Image (tube, rainbow, N blue to C red; front, top):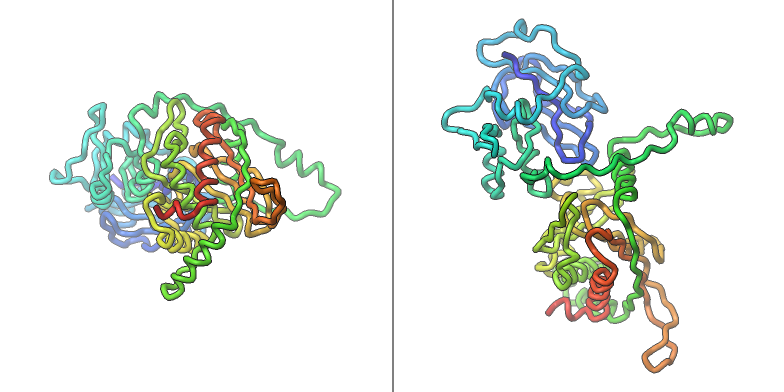
Length: 428
């Protein structure tokens, strides 16, 4: 029978997307792994691959259509021997409902062959995945039985596996994890509009990214018990050290920024205080071994937090080069999901915009985020009580109290301060 192709979830946070472009047309033959369409998510434009073989019998959603819900019907694929007459009455996107995961896993896969035996889940049901997804999972050392598929019949596709490399691997006990309380809602659009009915205004529709940011910020402030720790950091030694390093790097086209040193200092501090290198997982805490540091990057209409993996083991020049590449591709919306998901900790730096101090909102499931202000010349008292002028940067650590207590957070912030005020230790 014809195969319904549904709008995929190309990232764990995706709820809807724009079908930007079809790369096939009705009557075209496709094989598993062929790219069928380009889909704009809340974060980036991504390619959607076929997971079955067949002929495109009908394109239900035309290209350029916005706000297509995940699991809405977007096209119909015909198998060998079938024709358009076999499609019958095609349901509207709203009528097309996704199969439950368990049923989808147990359903026969149209393109599966005996040589492509699917792994079995804990309950004995078979798990189906595209050949490309299997290959990526094997390369990454991932267990397909712990990954939820978003393809037809619950098939695991490339995007599912790529997302799983970051944080989307479904733990066996995930179903037992209690759900967080639903956030309360503010005033409705109609009520707000009535309040300003006698004023001139422009209504700006929210795009996918802004909707996601709004949802996650409400979730963060309503479900995470934030508290805040502040320290002043003297930067004069770092500025001198940075100047010396940059002079030695002139011929290599690398110029280290203060932010590069902050990333490295935080990564090393996470190793020194490993209980802070953790995330909140509903009914448990996951402690990470590597220091995967996320860094907020402002883009038009929102922000990304690309993740620098294993930042503790990378040189300053490597971190600088990688950060510049991630920031450039973030502004172009060309990051893959695994490049902006994951990590246990984030940095938000508004110092270059003249902000001296601020409080940042934790990005769940992270346990903390460091808000970095500008370095400002200030009078300071030395150890002997004499006044001097120093470059001082104020930082604020926002902490999830469920994961990190006050004394532990203070220890972590002291470690960050220590590296930044004695930067030679970052090279030890």
